[in-house]
Image 1 (cartoon, rainbow, N blue to C red):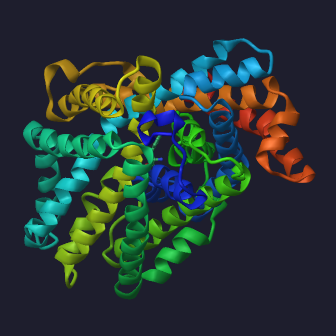
Image 2 (spheres, rainbow, N blue to C red; image 1 turned 180 degrees about the vertical axis):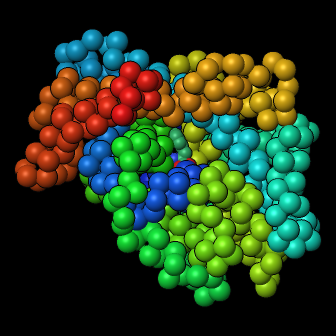
Length: 459
Ligand code: PHE
């Protein structure tokens, strides 16, 4: 069996799979997005709701996706079609898998641009630009706005990210993807732990811990609940074809339930560690937790500019962000590349290049949105005012929840419980819980988020 034939590949161990899937899950969502949405939604109470969403919705949906991939042993659309047919149902359910591949492709086109910012910040830290700003808010703000509005810089950094992604994937699943994540994931944990310890010692750790862990439910709005649920999907990389394709490479005999729980725990631990690395610095420097998306790229560098060894800390910190984003980018391109191998008969390396070129071309829309190019400024009302905003809305608010909804309906209502039970490796009682969750809790909760997102239900 050659490693180059994508869907015939298998992870060489359960551990390698767990690392790769954790790499897919842990990304900008954990380090960039989670800390600032937690800040915007009042801290502790939001964290509790988020944890419940991961436990009762995220984990069951992840298990369902991995099951489909493993059972179908093909790229997402084919895998869903095969599982549907095995259960005597229409193969049109394949649309769920196709939607996933599409969502992954679209997400990646803007993901590489934001990951590119992090790469740029590694260089800005190394070159001393961040320390030179000496914590001056205006200078740091300018650094960020110059970067995000300069098409040349954006193009260089995001191209670097996609070229790196293609180079790794061209080498196949075990020789490329697996080998790289087995190095990068431990490195990521290590870097994060170093930053967390540093922040804990030099920053205001107790303020951070009480902000994150003492819940004030009066600060929780219904919208925060919806944000938490949406983020549970995003952070676990659900409904984007990823968990299905990674499931297709699962060796026989792996417990889907146990590994999914490990992956979700690792993802959650990283998100909480990221919070504990960022908030002590935020509070010690009088920065507002509600700073929003700029928290990572503007607020933190202000602190880095004033602290001892700030240049080194900043370099380590942004290197960690790049590593996290890169292992997610690998995952996001994998299902498109595998699709081209399986369905279009391309060689693995050609498939990686073709998929990567497609993503790169589409990323010009996001770059144009930031750089103010005319073609990228599209007014779509509530969906956004430029290509990037529309793409972000379309994926996070429509494709991901809709995909999740269809997956739970498919697994909960369409396929037979016995086959599912046999593969999940769960005892009777836990299986009943899983089954109830995918049948009732998850579809209902996702439907509420989705209808709210598209404005049919304004809560
Ligand atoms: N889960 C990844 C993160 O947290 C990103 C991602 C989102 C990947 C959606 C796939 C789909 O950054």
